[in-house]
Length: 440
Ligand code: GLA
Image 1 (spheres, rainbow, N blue to C red):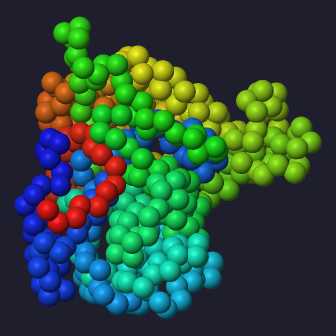
Image 2 (spheres, rainbow, N blue to C red):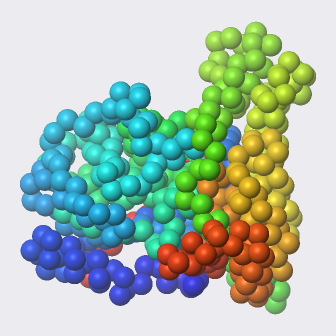
Image 3 (cartoon, rainbow, N blue to C red):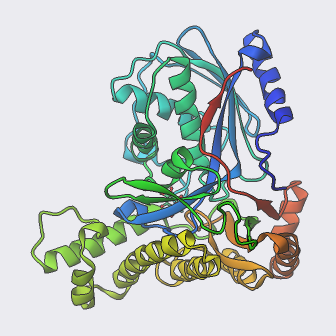
């Protein structure tokens, strides 16, 4: 629980030993990519429309221990999934045709991380690097492992995996790549190779974030800044209200409602943008909501049918919450920041209409928990976790409250979490962005 302690040295050593045995090398030769999960306190579901987002990485995520294989062979194992993935980086790795590319994507648009397909992220990373002209001579021999209980949690495990393979392959092939280029490479994995029409929030957060800062990004211009809260700067006033991050797991790893999907919501936002742009004769502009001026939205929103009007309302109100949130964070008004998170959660339910009964129940429980400043769904919001910002002094109390209250509402789901040996509520802290640890 908590602490700036991820990854633990013992965790790294265990992975190094397995990879050293797989590759018949010494543990000193094994390198490890640390690729953290992210939370998005404000800015949900607007990255794919070029909106503004905020994010932070946490002290949990993906570890990929590896050695360069010395030849084009890739040999991969997973601590969570069975089987061994083997392929060569000098083979062609093209995305499958539309229908095929989507065969392992859930109705909610998230990938089922099953044994049959977990190797596809590595293939996608090879595809992304090669499609931009990089030459790969070396594969890797590696073991990938995610923080326990958090796969399919809505914490961006798929982007964390994609980034991990990208960094490992770049390291093994001595290719130097900027974070901005890696944001694009991961986009190619997700949009082109896996067929998910998501935005760039996840990988941007994973690649750019710094411990203690809020990462703000304009997904249209790709400009970003790391914002330190005045509350968290060196304490000169004697008042230091620190926060922690609660991850409350719903126990749902896959969508309950089929047919309600991530890609469908993206298409609805685009439809709304088209109507609004056409209303002012801007037929030539790409149909994304960031191309629509707020004034145009206000003047022409009555032309949208009710469903499209809700999607557009989410976009414009969420963009505004991100802007206000950055101001609140900067000046240390954590209570205001928290209220915006809760309002963002409400808009996801009412306007974006994602989530499902257990996730909405969990959100309502979190909002009432002691010390919680604000809460919302994590990630796409169709399954997985809710996140909350909580007063550090009350974090344990809040965790107990949430577990007990959610258990009253969804005993079977909590039973399943406990049976699988996972925690229903975790207390986390902000962490650093993705990096490679080489032997000491
Ligand atoms: C998923 C997607 C992101 C973003 C979030 C919702 O994590 O991968 O691009 O749209 O959902 O904010």
